[in-house]
Image 1: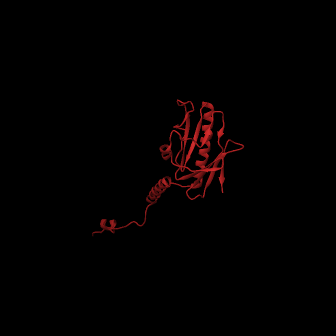
Image 2 (image 1 turned 180 degrees about the vertical axis):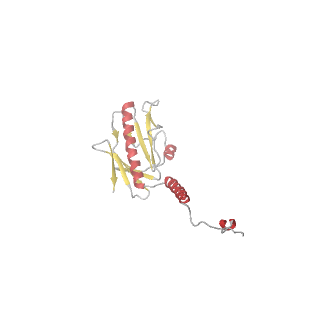
Image 3 (image 1 turned 60 degrees about the vertical axis):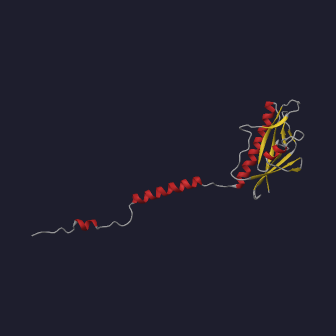
Length: 192
C-alpha cells in the first residue's frame, strides 16, 4: 500500500503570500521620510518681509559700526547708496592735504546681497537723491566732481548730513527705513 503525500513540493511552491510584511512597510516609510526631509531642507523659504527687515537692520548696524570705527581709528568713513546696494568709503590723504574718498574694502563693512532684490531710496536733508550703480558713478567722476559718500561718519563722532534710507521689496509690500534719529544716532522703522 503506498501512501501519497497530501501536499507535493510542486503544490507547496504555489502557495502565495498576500500583502507586505511589517518590516517591508517600515523600510518604505523610512525611505519616504528621508526623501521628504531632504526636499524640505533644500526648499528656499522666501520671506520678503523678513529679508527686507534683516537688510535694513544690517545696514543700520553697519552704519553704526562705521561711525564707531571712525572715532576709534580717527579716520573719516562714509557710505554711498546705489539702487540695490551700498558701498563704504574712507577718506584717504592725498598730495593736496584735503583727502580723497576711496572705496573702502573691509570684511565687516560690506554689503551682503540678500536672497532677492531689495531696492533703496535715499533722502539727504529731506531731498530725494537719484541713485546710480557704483561702476557708472566711478566712470563719470572727474577731478572737479569726484565721487563722495551720501552719509559721512566723522572721527569726532558726528554723522552728517541728516539722512533717510528706505528699503523695500520689488512690489513695495514691505518697507523699512534707516534714518538719523533723535534718541539714537541711527534708527530703524517699519513704513506702512
